[in-house]
Image 1: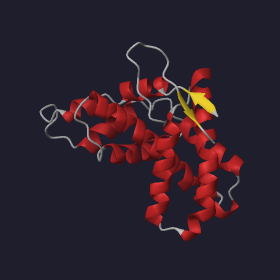
Image 2: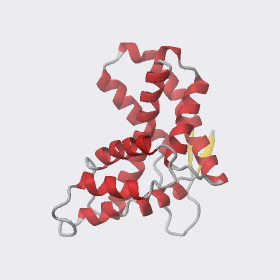
Image 3: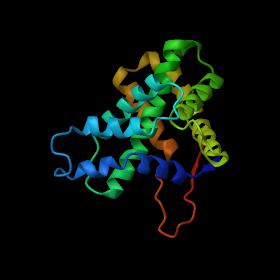
Image 4: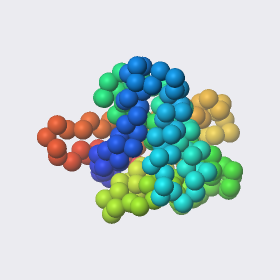
Length: 190
């Protein structure tokens, strides 16, 4: 069982993608599509990214996910950020793993490495607290993804994608930022 705080990551993404809330007011940017506003905001925060192409590809997938979520208020925006970041991270890690190693040859250490690599892509300068969070997140996802790999040949692509989404939700937790300013924690079981 591991505990981790999602608050630092949520704050970083919320600040970085504040344009999502601006977009939710349709009078703010009537001629811009949500996707372009989101991607432009994403890329404006990517100066430190070591691989700009992968960073942009990740951002495009993230923004595509966010565009399907309700963005009516700040709470909905925070939920969309948390959900889409987690989903995009795991889908991207699994896609890379499948392309580079192959799911049938993947080992637990490979899953953890690819998960950590995606976190490093979007947060290249992690603090020790960030590293603890990303390690806990990847440790949560790894055994569940290994189980998914074992049954991947017997399920449809849609079921596979839905399973990744479920794992992403489980590992990001149902975190609610507390109004008291204390650290928000979520426990996960492996």
